Length: 230
Length: 188
Image (cartoon, rainbow over all chains, first blue to last red; front, side, top):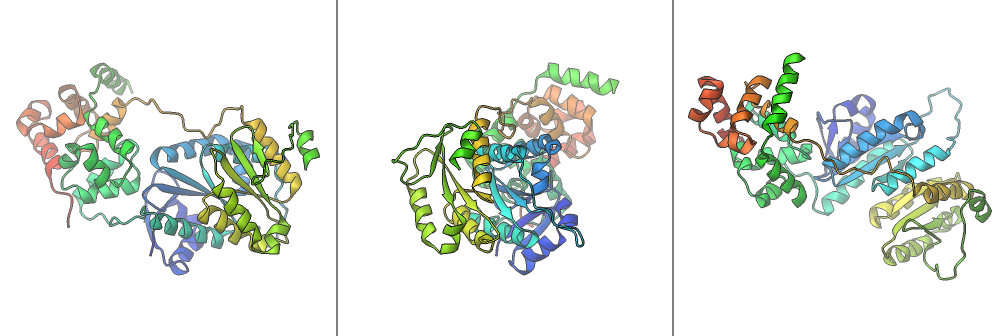
């Protein structure tokens, strides 16, 4: 069975999708609080679901660009499922009109290395998510770390790990299960962070450097002053 | 299709050497076109796709697939094959008109700045360190700033003995901070 993490914000719009993942695709779906409404299907892959009209609307581009680049900072692979708009019962079905703007958005996403998948609706999206999770599992990237974080201290440690730069939820889970204490992680070598966090070498290096980064007292002074005035 | 592309301001060169791909674009990508007939006719298009993938040079390989009323029942199988099995990029089109519009965008969009391209972030680390220190229970903004004035990195703060923390934040906070870093988290 494959394991998929879902942000709690996906639930209201995705009850059927989650049910289908569990029942038809026998996936373990764990709901958690991520920093956006997306799915995590492996240690390195995030998936967002968008309707076709979402991609087609000009006003959405800035938000979409922010979302995509935030995800690219946290995951090696980012995938968008573009879903056909649902037609409400009674509505006349209007065929989707492709615009030049839509094409340019799709092209820009492809050139930025975002993987695109096309779906007819909820049921197909569930199949695609499960398929991606299985594919990643075959490549040895599946989520294998326990999903439950028990106890207050462990929860606090998880929150701290989520504050590390470029650390996604699965990395933070792995860190909190694989290091005995927070101090052990902080004093670990790059290799140990890479292994314990199930993450890439460059990500482990970034964390290693961050933990040793020496704060500039001038900057802290100014932020202290700013804190006083606010 | 050619006339549409030329209408969109795209210059076309015909070459006999493009045995495997159907189009080569200036931005190091190439395109294979799978028509509705190909999809409906059976599995021979798969051989063409595999050949296309295996010929891979340094080009970004795209596959345009006609998804029409006639071929839509096969679309999800085609997508699985192209994306999951071959690892190529698939873009659906309704026919040659849409395809040429899309290709025109690919050619023209090349010069523009890509809003989705991740800029190498040169973000300041200081605020991130400050925020992280505030994740320690009992440490708010004021204590976090005071701690970082004395122990400038997270590692130094973590390895400081309670006696060293005490003059900065007082005895009970010093104990709390030290034990937070050194208390067991793993196991059950």
